[in-house]
Image 1 (cartoon, rainbow, N blue to C red):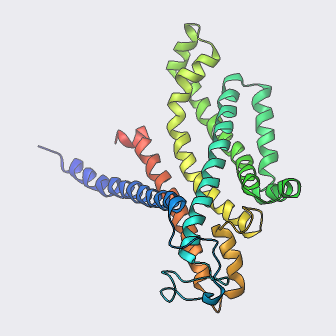
Image 2 (tube, one colour; image 1 turned 60 degrees about the vertical axis):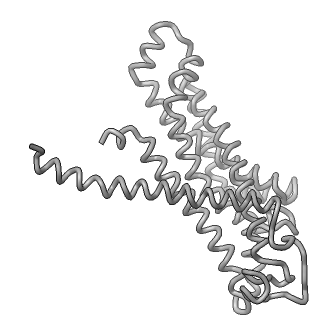
Image 3 (cartoon, rainbow, N blue to C red; image 1 turned 90 degrees about the vertical axis):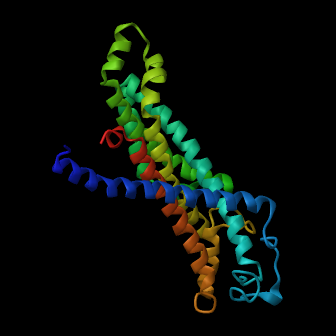
Length: 287
């Protein structure tokens, strides 16, 4: 006979697991749709996103096009689709570069320890003291606004973020028995890092990367809002928000639509990262 306490416990866990699964599925669906829209914008949009039609400027949704037009008569839906590709491509590239460099630094510091670990932490503290917006302003002064400036500013900020996370998880792995056994049989620190430490922390790096993509999207939007992102006339969600400031009372959809796009994207990546964290967490799998 099954104990009543066990039945109650299993029933209590089921909603928790279902809610976590919903987060994963919902986040994956949102991100998949956004990626599909971004890829579709490379081959098709209702109208060319940069095409101006002054005679149709500030048309409300459904009056001219599905989502109306902006102050230059450009189709808002086409601009949102093209902006989706620009925002996602910048964010994903920056997180990939920053995550790779930061993870390498964190794993190396955990293996070498000593002065190298202390130096890495001090460098991370210095970078954290400079927000990505300020870093982009400095880079923009030398390089000018553009895709490279936005990617570099976000990637530089991501390096210490991943370095700290990877260092902490790597140090935990180095304290495990399987690493002690590998050291006892004469494996080098490099071999242990590649064969034992990195495979055991890669899932946490992936989860952290998914969450950081949401932050990268917000940062890219902020850079574009300040004019430090991609140069006009390439559409980005942040620049659409900046251009809409003057027309908030006359055409509120110009600010509402890109704002919703940014919020939905950040929500999707956060839900995906949260769901992946629970899916790949061995403690949750054993419950």
